[in-house]
Image (cartoon, rainbow, N blue to C red; front, side):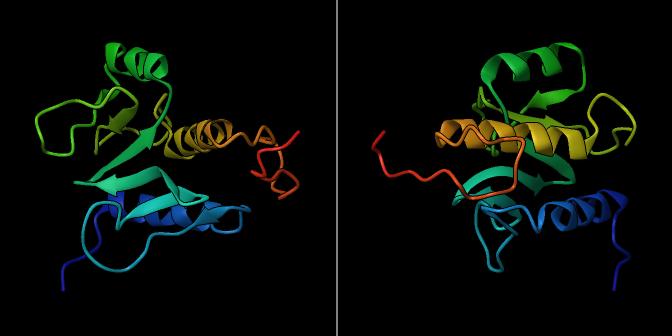
Length: 133
C-alpha cells in the first residue's frame, strides 16, 4: 500500500472541515467525474483532481489567480480550459494565496450565491429555493 500523498491528506482535511456545513455533502464513492467532490446542494464547488484542489469561482477571480501564477484554468483533460474553474498547483504552499481552506470557502460562497442562498456567513438552512418572494 502506498503512503498517502500530502495533497490528498490536505484534501481529506478540507472534507473534514466542511463536513458539518449545512447543504454540503462529502465526496461519494464510485468512479467518474466528481467522485472526489465537495458539493453544495448537489452542485460541485471543490474537488480533488490529479493532486490539485479544483474550485469553482467567478471567471474574473479565476483570471486573477491564473495571472498571478497561483495555478491554472481547469480543463478536465478535454483541452478546453473552463472559465469558472481554477486548479491550484499540487505543490502550492499551504500558507500561500492559494490556501485550500480559503479557496474552498470562497467557492462555497460562490455556490451559495449561484443557488440564490445569500447566507454565506451562516450555516443555517433558513433560505429555500421555493421560487417565491
